[in-house]
Image (cartoon, rainbow, N blue to C red; front, side, top):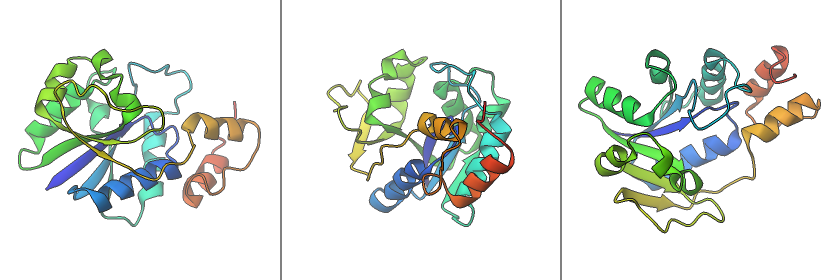
Length: 190
């Protein structure tokens, strides 16, 4: 089985994430997409992160009923901060019969040289990249890549957190179950 690994903080998950994941299922040979919730991305500030278990729960709410999507907490048991190279090695050892590809935007791929042991990633794993405006892939770093033109929304988790802080609606930009849970638990209000 070919599994696309969509890494992220998902702080919170939103409709844009789901559209990209669904597009990759429809237009590539990926059989399932796993949303890998990262407890702490070493390239991002962690002060605004909701607890990883709460973010995992929001992902589970967002993908409920879709058996081609899975929320993964694999990085919760690995040393922090989370390094993709360690996660990939762990997953390949734990699931030797599966074939894994890494899903990311072309904007993130441009930062790959900043990742720990990125040469191991680019030489051992396939990358499925979705186009982000203004971030054309000019250097592949010897990676096996395929690029898809997924429909994109100008959405970000930062924008959603700001909307919540300002007591503005997040309806339609996150699944309804996610919106209800965020509001009921007063997430992102500070």
